[in-house]
Image (cartoon, rainbow, N blue to C red; front, side, top):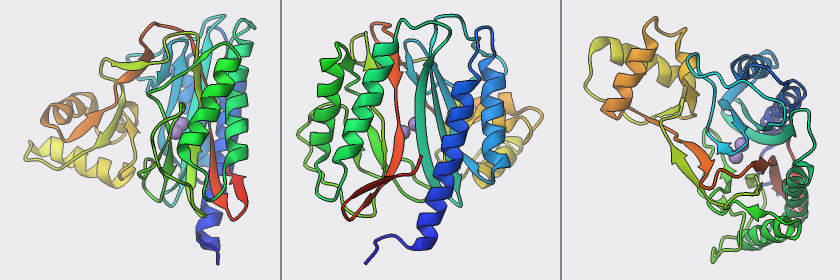
Length: 297
Ligand code: MN
Ligand code: MN
């Protein structure tokens, strides 16, 4: 008996195909001198043109930035020759998300082995996926492959199970061996995302980022509440970008800051290798089948 209906599977597959195309588009359009803001907008527009919605703002991590940076109108990182750029995209169809990432180096080949180590770890890890596989064993494989290439896995970033309207549905897929007893089962949808680095292998949050999520309603001024209601309708429980709120209100920047201070929304700090080492990432979403898995992205 299939644990996921054909209708649900079709939505995951559509989200996966859209996310894959958006990732490839992003990787193909990273250029020295290019604007990360323009690229993020183009990638997100492509997701919408294909009939999907963004499951989160495009994350564009340059060099030591591992995750949770998305450009804003006031903070637009420009790509430089030699940068190592991660493009991490999420698309959803009717709430069913797919999450995928890849890494590209801008005009140089100084970090090819680092990038390949994350890709190889992902490939090896995907080969293990089947009902009964332990997540700790998956982490051990990721760690082994990356260390064998001479790099470190990022130990405090993980993959995650996903469900409708939920990017982190309870199970973590570590990038190192753990004491975790979780086992995979048929029908689970997983994002698997090894990170490799020349740095310390630990990331920490630095500053308030531009990616937010709705937390709770609060007593607040009328203009704050009006924008909050629109956000909840538009973005649901998925993360959103500050720049997405521009079209919802002319004074969205100030209102978003008020909401943040009131605890109505939370922000994801930008995650950076604590030793400022360059980080690479590879990610696919998969669905666990009776005898293995199907890659959605
Ligand atoms: Mn991702
Ligand atoms: Mn992910």
